Image (cartoon, rainbow, N blue to C red; front, side, top):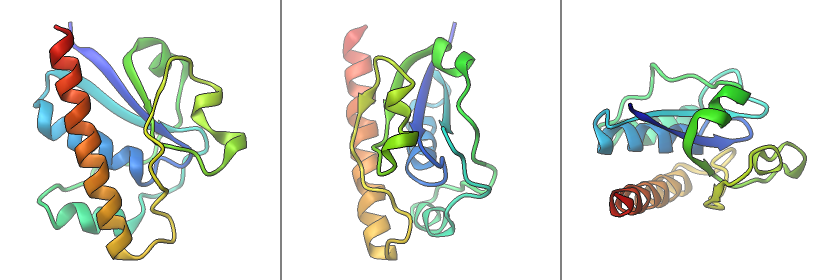
Length: 135
């Protein structure tokens, strides 16, 4: 049975979406990966979509989703991307989260979003390696 990996943030418009896309790319369907937010945006951050496209990852079919109890209950690993909005922070609602504390790309320059993207890529690769070492 495929294990679920859940990436969470408040708006599910940037960081968790990038993490989902990277994890999916690097694990090639070994896991069921999803991202969600406590207060999801209507749309993905367009700069996030652009910087991912620069490295060959198309996120246009992804959309923000609301975190659900079943997502939480079924996840093998839950990763909180970091919280700027403490009242809506997923870590308040989700136990046993791994917290990456990554800056929110909202209202950042494209150069700053590229740095966030690269940081997320590195964290995802480290997470995959740690999961593989658990086996």
